[in-house]
Image (cartoon, rainbow, N blue to C red; front, side, top):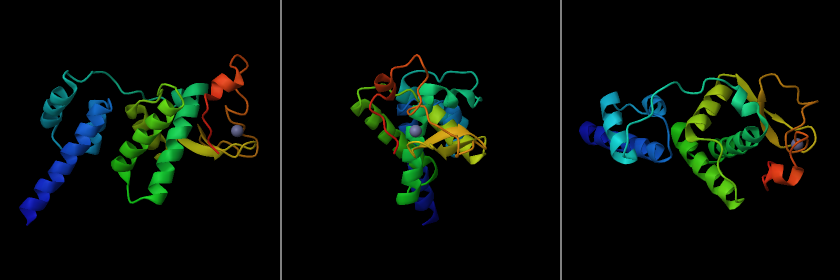
Length: 179
Ligand SMILES: [Zn+2]
């Protein structure tokens, strides 16, 4: 029984890895989220993506998530992720994969392009877990947005309620609502 269980477990890991590769995840995400060996992941990546994984560092800075449009996308994704973790049996990487699917569906339904990559979505969840970022309710609309840690909710106003001067409000939101 132990053997069949571990084969099933491995099958599950391979499915997860394939899902992530198809979504464009970097190899580092796969290494972190599955127990498959680097060699197997590399082989799988080449098979599924039809190319070698890109080398180089992952984005390590929290800044990107706080710039205006990426912040709206990041917040939308994180709302979906939080909702899934609370309301479904999904957890960890499975919740992240499902949340990312729902995020891209919602963005495409608005006629927009996804700005948040699966790798960034994964980093975002890590940043929030490590308290390097948090979500804060907007004092005007009540939507939850990704902010710096220790943002004061009494004074916080989100990028949809107060878009930067250069952006038109309608175009800015692009139909996205986080209430
Ligand atoms: Zn707001």
